[in-house]
Image 1 (cartoon, rainbow, N blue to C red):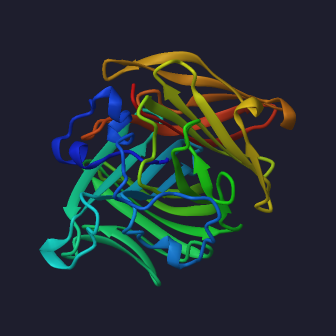
Image 2: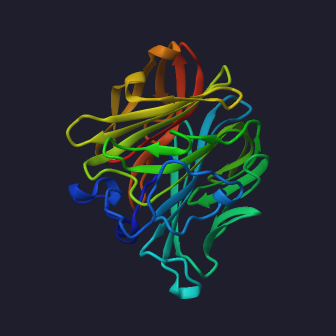
Length: 350
């Protein structure tokens, strides 16, 4: 999800999805010695940590929602705001501000995929985030409210729009070890927390047709200065709502040598965490689909032997390709097997 660390300044400005191998996917493996590091032992503070962290190079606010209409048709929406510091000390007033902001929005139906991108410069009011009251915006796209209570999210693009009311039914969840999410064996990491307990209700607009919907939503917050190792080519990220009230987050960071880095978190209905390490997870693609000239896995198996979970994941719409400046696959999925449910899958670097 994250939408997830997705982009760095070069890609945002050029729309290029190829980077030198030494910089990792989307340049997220670039060195970051002049920015703040991620270190263990951080004490999270809310609502302050809902706001920006200008000493870090990259951060994002990211919402996905699994929705259905009165006839049972399934939909998904994505809303993401990225902040990328073009230089240390970027948080300056006016046109001296060195933050680049990027918004991504998507809407997926069982047969259609819509996506949009917008970008802006910080410091001039076009985009930004305030912690209290919480509001994240770029142009007229907005996520605002109380991330432990009631919030709303809205965006629009060519052929689509959505507005959802969100109501939290559980606590914020720190990912990784106390909110430090390690992304590689060499130590790259992010600060990472989620709100996986949103109930969602609202309206989609699809080519002028209004569709009332309701369902489940998930918010991710991450910030870092070097999100990936230089040899990591992309990732596969799952956020799953299981019917028994548990939530499951899994990451597979794909490395050039094929020794992929796995981690995750099984979240109980009361918000209690069970961090998952590489030896706890068996994750494998089962079939692929050709989209935008790429072969992309759209069916997966997930087995957590220690948790007695054996799941099969299938895309609601295999053509859920986000054809943006940096393209990637992102869309809703169905969950079958030892537990049923719904969720979201993001795949980058294909």
